[in-house]
Length: 111
Image 1 (cartoon, rainbow, N blue to C red):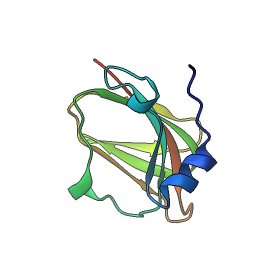
Image 2 (image 1 turned 90 degrees about the horizontal axis):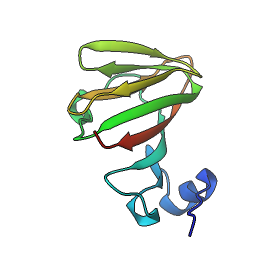
Image 3 (image 1 turned 120 degrees about the vertical axis):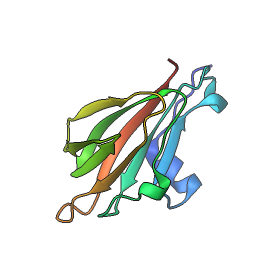
Image 4 (image 1 turned 135 degrees about the vertical axis):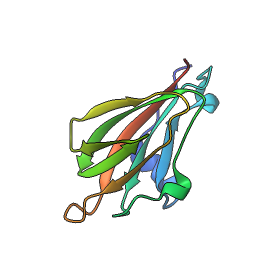
């Protein structure tokens, strides 16, 4: 059976938060494969909650503007920007003050 998710429905069911998993293990994904959307509204990096995973994670900016700290590198985020964070590398994101938010699609894939 094909699993289908609609972001508005996922948000409605999960409530207000930063990240929303759209498709994951519950939908038949294997080997850590999953994807979702996160909305960043902080204007400063929260390095205490920087992510680092056993698998690689890809990002695609959908709306808004911001910045991503990936290891020691900073990436400017705007719609259409796409990048991959290698396994084990700490990363976090923030929005630009004049943007108010930065919405990104993300996916995890086994290495």
